[in-house]
Length: 280
Picture 1 (cartoon, rainbow, N blue to C red):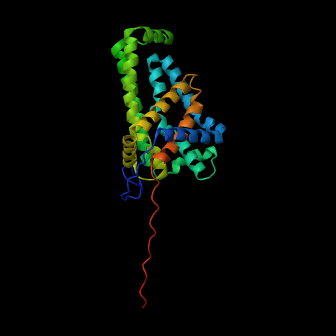
Picture 2: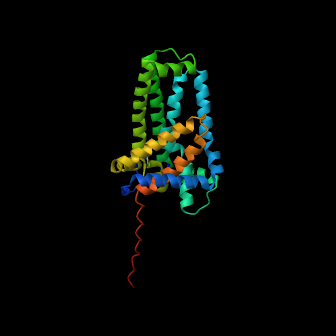
């Protein structure tokens, strides 16, 4: 398959690793402000685009309720944070176009399919999906360890048990700590990976490596960003996931602006000098 690439750029050449900037806490909040401005530019379009995520979430919750899997509702909701970087691809594209003063109609969100880095993007998307599935299996294993193989009789009874018994407290504390580890893995490997791949065709490995370097160079701002994402997803999920129709696009656009603050722009290509022919 022509130009199929994952580890390296589509050109097959060695690409210089993106340079990392050091940012402060104020830069994180500024990225959030810019993301909200992108959302506010045409909010109806973005709410339309992102309604799919609350709808899918409600479907999954309904499925778990009918399939004796009530214990997986919370892991499913919190798992949105793991899939968020991939789910927001179209929003990165809208922010990129707005930054370049191009047309930002919602239809352009689907133009990411034409990106030369799409194979690498797809691989990272599969990686996040595998992480999400691993989180669900881990959450189920933790529940089985504490509660056995019997599914909760009802959602109300399960919540009451979680809040009032020792095994419920253990489930909350251990489950959230394990979930935090999964979230840190996703954050450290993809915090700028998808915006970077849309902006530059450098390959999946370089994108993940750049995300890790960005985290190490800016641990406090990046941890703050992770907390903002987690808090936003929780708040957006409370009213039957409807709030995600606003939270997801704002976070998606903000991620693009955070990427711009973290990564130095690509150097301009050197002009090719034409050789002069000797006169006959």
